Length: 130
Image (cartoon, rainbow, N blue to C red):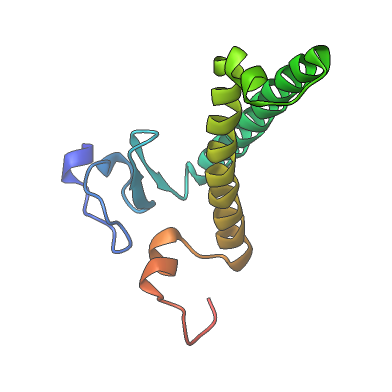
């Protein structure tokens, strides 16, 4: 029986990854795969590691900008515009870190209450325990 002959599970919102039949909960376009019971821990690990990497890039770019400000002995717009790549990287990685931290917190919350994304969005267990 190939993946196409497999029935679609009741919690599945995507028919794109039928190989994960029985475990699929949601299709993630960023990783190009359905996230389900069998690969959820790898997805959460991926998100956590990307968040840590983004925090490290932010810390490094802030350190570069601070070092240049300390070398110039002044903090003004001219100092920031002299190093546009580091300044833009600080802003971009801060915004990405904000988003990734929110995503990590959401998935860690889902793990702690034992629900899938679809169950949380559809409020399957709103009035009763999981």
